[in-house]
Length: 75
Image (cartoon, rainbow, N blue to C red; front, side, top):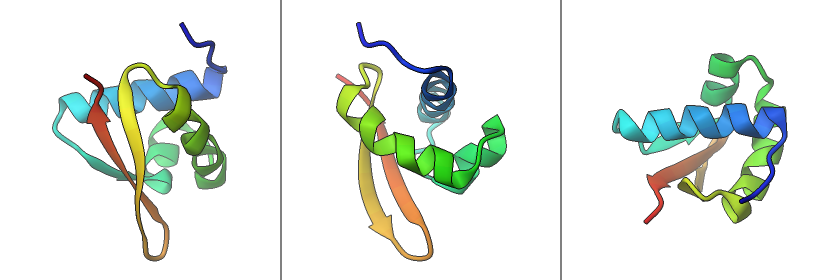
């Protein structure tokens, strides 16, 4: 089992909930607004979470004005 910081736990909880509701693509700003962090804080943690998350697969998907992340259930 991976150990997560409090911020990482909040991000993963948001992503897990989003995936169960059918959302597959998210932006750091959307997550940040929902959980009370800055987009920069979220964006800097997502690549690390992509490597160690057991619940969801996180993939950098596209970059326009901000990075879009593709999130899918793992397994």
